[in-house]
Length: 419
Image (tube, rainbow, N blue to C red; front, side, top):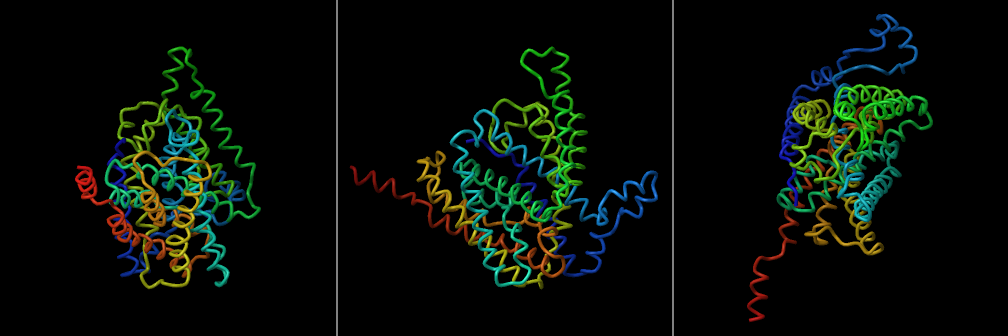
């Protein structure tokens, strides 16, 4: 089994550190906290004062403004989603990828079942609470970073269940954020803006990514350049944001065009540090900055008001702790029986149950959906509290893992019985 790079755990500590500082700040001095994260760095009034700014101000929505909150959530977190999206894309297209062929059936069914279960349980609460149904995308995503730390505590380093947990949490998080953006758009999606990321991706691929095995040396050297992908990423981000989709997804359209390695070594594998293709080089460049990004995300989005408990808090917890694990595990077992699948080598059905329970921890990606899925104010803060409290599932999962772990005495007893 491959080894997951240690930076994933550093990401978790950075995220939790920012969240801890924000939680202390918002409970000790809430006014200064919200004034800081919502301070207007830039808005349409300042844009109109610039050359050609009036023309741009007429095109952009009136709500466009740049604050520390939006800078981190919309721009900087796009780097994080690009980083984790790269792992999912490689799992689909590379040799020995985890989502190639029949290997994709189990994770895909588990993700779909978990999202469906979370949505249905949320809907039960939404049917009895006015205005709550609109927030159904909030519990769809699982936490990638904190979930990995919990899974590592449960299974230990190198266990195949870690791979399944990372795979399903990345997929559900990206899908949940996309569904949240589509749900928020209603019918206001400006499809023409989506031509911008498409054009940027195709142009970068035609000039720098389409390199065949018989390409001349100059073309091969040109394909290693990173600046075309940085430019294409910027254009893609602008197009996604202008179309009304979550800007944090803005860098994902360029992933299929970037030259990549020929085979997969696993999600966040240490072996990838020795690869020099453009996609892995971009990923390597992001490792250190992303620790700061996740700290900033915890600082701007992770301020937990401990007095914000409300029905929305219970809805989030029920969807994450009941709906998602139940849907995840049921769909996974159905896939195993219906398609006659084998569990990944080294995993037992009890391990699958533990992975399903860990999927009920939702913090990072669910917080990205709050602003679009729920009205602001008390409802959003109570949902934020619910997402934070979902981490308390960890001790229960660890305790259950100890109960389900086979006794080390059993093999010795069986050998004595044979003698």
